[in-house]
Image (tube, rainbow, N blue to C red; front, top):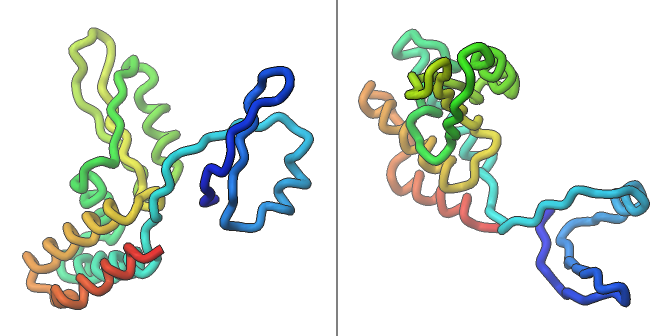
Length: 174
């Protein structure tokens, strides 16, 4: 939920009390959560991807699939690997690598993995790519840009630069 920090105060016993100003309606969750211990994460808000951008991406994947004979999912997974800033690399024992990969890939079709050798004996490096459902506006923009480049390389018509710029501007609006 989007919020702004409003106040930081101290209780009589020296504990800190943080007050947030929320943009959404939290009343129902408050009643449910007000008497249980919570784990809280506060991080800088970033606008999430546009659903229109996601829809356009899948239209382009469909056009590429039709032209190349590849599946939309294979095209998606290839482009996921190329956008940058969406991957973690972990070194794990070879015996556990397959279980890690299966667990990660269970999150969805965009949650792909690759392996590469490790310098540590008995270990392998596993690259864990996040699916596009987690992408912010900048990452989604790169995803669409790469897909457009693939379409152009295949002679597939896409939005004009002006139309694309207008769509991207809409992504930036809160």
